Image 1 (cartoon, rainbow over the protein chains, first blue to last red):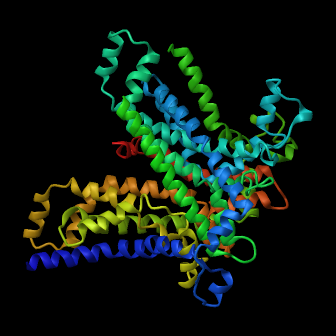
Image 2: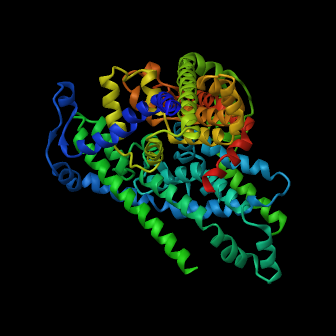
Image 3: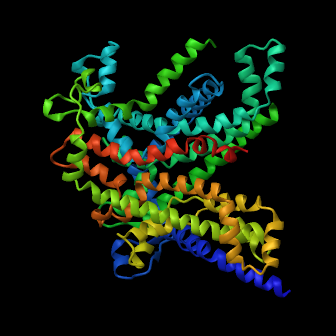
Length: 300
Length: 271
């Protein structure tokens, strides 16, 4: 018993730093943040040491009634279009780099470099690409798809800024999912592939009938990860367009951030309520993802 | 698929992946006194007059050294803190039975899936109350206890044979001695992996340091400061490109040195 008691004491001592930090900076803000969503609380109250005041669902009425938030949420949902594009491309690239041909390691490594690029650097570099005089317009001109007179800055255009930002998200993400898919591909036993070849299956058939079914767990994981990431997109928007032009790239988390830290009143209550709405949507989408892929699995 | 087609496809994707870096490097190396525009394609992709002057210029005029140092301090503190906190927490979770272990482990796992949309608001308020808003400690402290590090170290500790620990205990070694003299040296690869991943993530982090240090711009790391280069009245793309390369270089070197770790390191996430 004595040993046990000492073991427990030691365990708690070693765990203490992690537990204290997690309590203060993860669990407390989760709970308190949820609570703030139901209160009136802003920069003035905080500065004057006034406690948050319970207002029930008022903030949610404010948020859901705010046209800006509805635009933001719609943009975030629209942003989910990046998920299928990103997943299909990453899987295809993973298949492409899975075969060990000379120099393949170099390609794998190079495709991963955007993943380890800071979002602020991505902003600096892609702004030159998207500039009115930039590479994208030059390329389109070279392909005779546009004329110098028709050129515009992609990030300043209310119809195109959204897709330009999404392209940067795609660029920063495909190498990451490629590595996950590559790991999944390499776990598939070679005999299965060989057996399919002996049975006369074409490359296309082998991909859809052998590779994809066996990759289902990886596909589920990657789709979940990228769905959540897409719904939570904030940094790209912040550094590339700051939500503009004309709110065309304003996303849900941008709204949370802006309500809490931009403007005059630092409305933490309304911002927290908006954050909760986004969290609920994220949870629903995860559940949906999960069900979708499980249903397919049952049928297979 | 035939080989030529395969390489052609690989080449196109390669251009998409690395073009922004290559062009940025080309701009950074271009002699701006030659008076050419960065948008004069395709000449601007291959600088005719190469110089390193832009690097010196941006370092001097933008006091880049200050921001570099901030990045180094923030990254260094975060890596040290993460390794320390993760190893300490992982040891009992891997090796001891004590009341509450299941609950504690469950809580740590839960942090991976809990919706965190509002945490940055409350954390900012907490830091303000603690007087840490606008300090490097304020950037670092909330980020060092994470499930990823604790998991990674726990897996590493689980792989060490129990007999080794028993022998040390029979010799009268304390648990702290066992941790520092046996466990940590034997799990050096995992510690290195965690350190490298943390280094890259922290060096590149934008949103959180931007938020915490928004009132103290002199303490901002490069990832935050580099965007200020864009807003400066004397907008100079050559200097911006040079600053960007300086910021990217450490991460690129770490990546090249630990490439296999990055490209294989995530397999655990799939299995």
